[in-house]
Length: 102
Image (tube, rainbow, N blue to C red):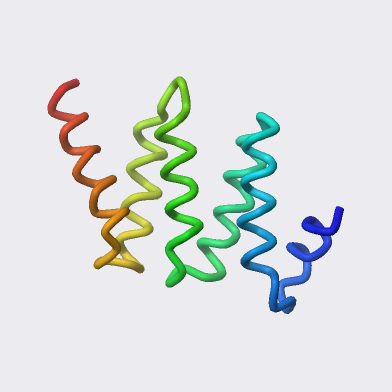
């Protein structure tokens, strides 16, 4: 309850951290669609902070059925705002290798 309340208050100084924690809890409760929604809100409101992009990439890559298009979109979006981010660059490289293999 506290996380939802904090996340719903965009002006809270704990908004971003609450959103990341909330997304993790939702994902671990098999509520990935809701987790992705929270992460998208964080990415939209704070695109220069890469953690929300990292978390979505990890969730999507860990999925038993990887949505390659959605994964490509989050990596591209993350690199647009964080072009020097090593984790996102590595995810981009993994995508290229995967595309060649398929």
